[in-house]
Length: 385
Figure: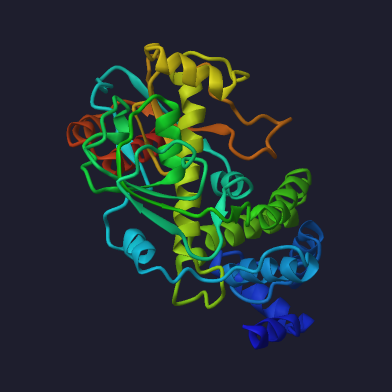
């Protein structure tokens, strides 16, 4: 790895520009040479001089190891060699993505659907997620989860999950759940019974400094109207999305200590937990200023939902409505003033309910619903004069 880092550090200006042009081509951006160069300079300006040393995921890793050289007290990660953790993360007995449709929210012809996207959810979660160092501890049949749900780790269910939340239906015993989702469920009063627990007592926000580079770059570029700033912003998104969404769990492309599937699992699970917490404000009729503790207390006390989502797929949540465009009260929207903040929502799509959406709902397929809504949205935009 040291030789690899040294090779990246020695990338010359011409080689860097060549690699930047290769990335531009893959983005289908055909630009004049001067604009190519200016967009690369915008990237440098926004990221504090981070070099475009290779493809986006590798650029993200280079940023991490640059931080390690700058911050001597920053722990250097080592791979987790636990066979149990590897099996949890790769053998299909774990949930971390929770795409779903609510069977009780019935789409009908004559009504409409709106879709809101959550902005920079990976970046928001990367700044706060707690990640383990080294190898974990493993316990069988713990008496309770008290004191454990705030740690990075996993829980294996001792019995099927019992909750009214539509995203967590039909989850059988022996399913592994990453701790950020367990923490969310417990905070909402769900009795999670564990047959096994894997936790890291040595842990920290190991991606916080890394996420800060790209969060600050995003903020700087969003404040600039120039086309080259928009190109550099696309590069920022591509780098952190590839790093957090791929490189953390890619044994093929990541040969560093950051190849930790447990880090990836905790991060992905936290993006979903954050989205659910945010949606709960709108679902239970709370204002955007409400604290999560207030919402949790109300749910535990039996408060009934007022604006539940139709469902969610990746970073998009859907709501049924009689008029559109519309945003359910309590959903924190990105505005011109706060658009740099990560984790806010933006109204992206709306359309009339179609037969395809009704069919997708009957099949409880969030992916078919996504495709049907996208198609109806495109058709609606095409007929607008």
